Image (cartoon, rainbow, N blue to C red; front, side, top):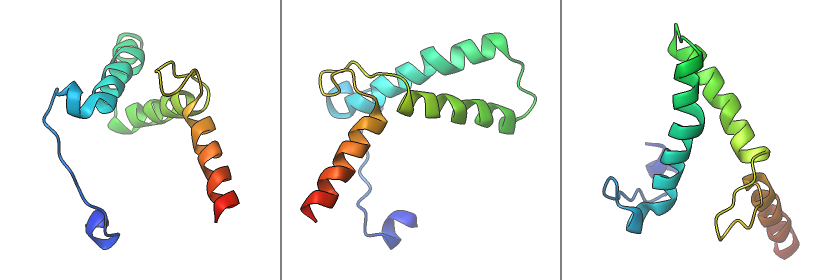
Length: 93
């Protein structure tokens, strides 16, 4: 509904197809290895809300503190890329 209301096209890709969905596949591997596996070894989650709270904290770390080494990122954090984009949009528009 959100996509339709905002005129956004929803595209689907095949599961486990790095050629068409490489960024998502890599993120899934990262979140599994850096968050879920360690979290489940260290913490007994009694509620989904507790798990969600920890995941949210990890996502903040992932997006604002953790450098990303992919060839397009060149060691920048996602927040740096967003800030750079917003700076350019404001300058151009």
